[in-house]
Figure 1 (tube, helix red, strand yellow):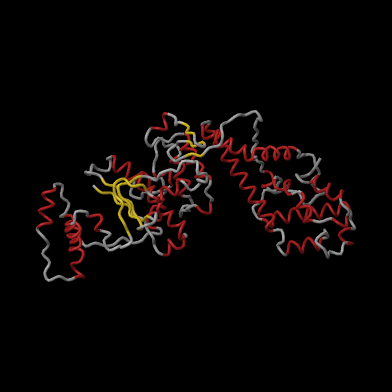
Figure 2: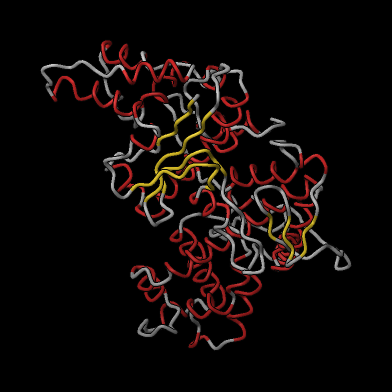
Length: 464
């Protein structure tokens, strides 16, 4: 009966080798696979190194009480107390244990993904099940459980000071997963954002419910859940109340039947229903945190701008043809008034807004967003897998000759109110998602610090 997982390997190593060749480093190298699957599941490398070095020295003392006093502690092979302390003082095993910790997290992440996939019992669940099986993760989980089943509650813990009897992490067990060798599932395949599965050159048809525009089918719910589970707590936005923004948005969005901007963890601060999800003490912080001040417009300039809000072409034609009476002209006072008139006088008012930006072009007519396309294809490695198109929108402000984008525009023929389809579908769901992709494009290219330092913002226009 062994007191902890890895005890038998440690004892066997010391018994099978001459005491002159005992080596802590040699034991770690020889039994790495066992240590990978053995408690304690600690998150600091020096805690793991301290635990196993103490276990090693304790067993050396048990087998040969004279060993620690006789060994000269001059070579790597020497497993004396001074040598082990020297190795640890130089952080020799830091990389070794950090790789162990990383692989454990990777296994647990894959296991969590598998658990969520199997809960859905759909195509996506089977797909991830096959993927985890092909990677050998299930075999690793099964071996871990067999090792943990070898524990005994009857072992005398009092005589061994290096057991994890008071460590809560030691008691944490990996969930039990098993699989039949006869299970037959389809080949692992890629999945596109629109719910279609790509398996080599074959297309698996979508279920009828997934064809409904914006419906959150099982695959979409799985993707949303995986996105949330992949978030590290240190990367989440912590509010003054102690709550995390991502946790609140996920809890509300996970049961929604149709796609919403909340599935992309986007907060519309003008939406009372969304702001009501948060505590009152957090409202001001959410609205004001890391935001740039809005430009101030005089009432006179706003009233002048509203003069051009015409609904009939003849009314607009009469207004722009009447000209603008500014005399004498003062650029500091009258530039904005003259600019407004010039913009509406041109046949393409939106394009005129970017006339002073020589390297910017305005893409119109249901163009595909390059930033959205990059995000959708970020995991595409196989040329046989169909490339996914980016989201379409009425207008895109793009850097000339490159896929880098800065703004998105959606236009409606008439304004039908905040309950209109254009506002709810394009303005509240599609456009914020594209803006998110454009912002991520900047972060990926320049880094978070550059984006914050230069106050880079993505602009969305909703016209009617």
